[in-house]
Length: 156
Length: 90
Length: 117
Image 1 (cartoon, each protein chain N blue to C red):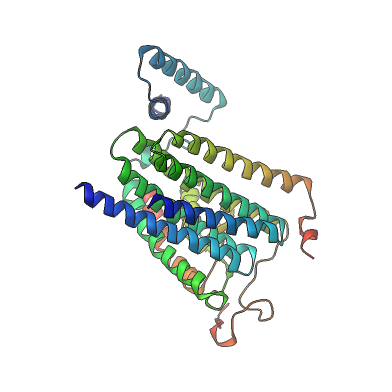
Image 2 (image 1 turned 120 degrees about the vertical axis):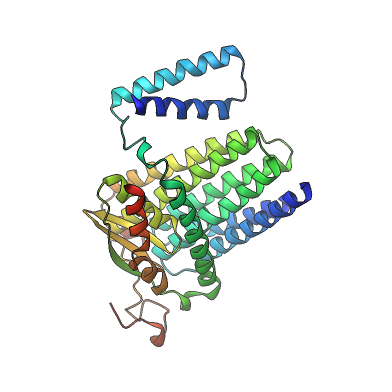
């Protein structure tokens, strides 16, 4: 029930942002469509802790701040590589172990890897993530395991 | 200032088109088209501000959605239809 | 206050354009597909974010701000998902990424190459 409420709130906010008309008729349409979509999602059995990760609500903003800092730093590094030309890059495939317990945590970890320029997660099998790294430094930065540790902290 | 950003975005879209023409593999072309699409979203948003009509943002949202879905659809299509996507490269 | 917001938004727009341009050039300059993904993600993350944040400073609080935020969050999520899907599909189809260890295929000179791996 918690998840249905969260989904309905999310859908209502989405509607209110995109509509811009707040007449009673439009709000009635909003209620109708939100209830319809929520029922549809319940029938599809996609309303659970994985699509509405409510338990992450308080732990994830801090991680986002750290991730933004990481993204900015690695953006500047990759931009330097672009202007420096092909001599400055040393692409490689590496394996990283994800220590998260849930699938959601692993997905957050893999998505953070991809969001950071210089590293792209190519494959996820079990707890092994195959990562394509642009330079030795970006690979080494990932292999220190700091991102892994921080995602583990978010998860609990 | 908007003009400068719009101009640079157009140049970047041109570069992405060059990469889409050059290839050499199928995936390079898909990547270039994806990049072209994300730049189009930004360009539509900038154009809305340039003309003083931020309503254009609705179109930008729709374009972002269509771009994402189409990239996934094209990837799915080639994943299942072609067992030899590499023969383009040789 | 208005002037300050203008200056911040201009700085964001110009640096965002710079990152977009860098990504576009990287898309042409980098030697193979997997390295080009990194260049594309450069424009997807900081390039797009900075331009949209710059527009947010111009828009002020309101519906336009919320829509820009929506585009920003969606483009970040969709960009990562799309680049992961492309990388996975290309590796599954047998496209081999360049590795800096083999000398002929890569432009990395002898001294630059790492000894490990």
